[in-house]
Length: 211
Image (cartoon, rainbow, N blue to C red; front, side, top):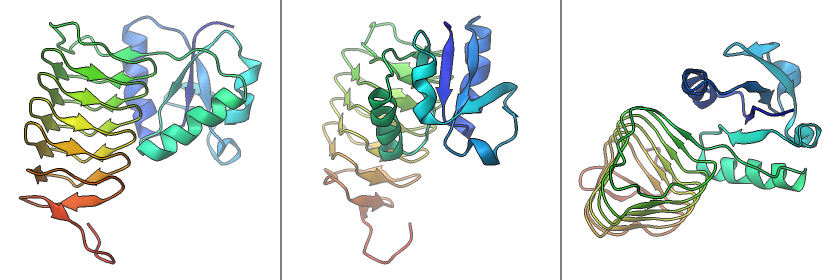
């Protein structure tokens, strides 16, 4: 059965569904391991089972709609182990990409995202509304750019990093793999892998302190 099969009954899924409908793409349903606790439909589409059931839909394009970057990576790995073979890519019609910057499979770009020139987005990247990715940026697989994030030129965002709403990153800065940048942060220096940085200017969050 052809069509798009969504992994994760999330808020992100409900944001993506109208874009898929607007594009005339058939949505088969949602797979989520919490399916026994969920209503029969989410966002108007049926909940069909758990992630392990992807093998029942060998012709479907899959789309991982899981917000946290690391969890999304885990879900994709599990789905591929269960037989997932092809991934959908969703780009809202309002996205500006005049330089034809490459966008990896499985990625989701929502309303008002702008890619300028010579940027590269990896696989399963999520860019929420209003994100700006400027020249020569490289966004790694499974990274999440929350609404309003702005990347200066030549920024490097590592695999499965998460940048919170309205965070801004100075040109040339490196955000390490699995790092977290808090909402509204102004990042002026490199952020080490796995660390959490917050504030203006952004600094590492101390252990035991909530962001």
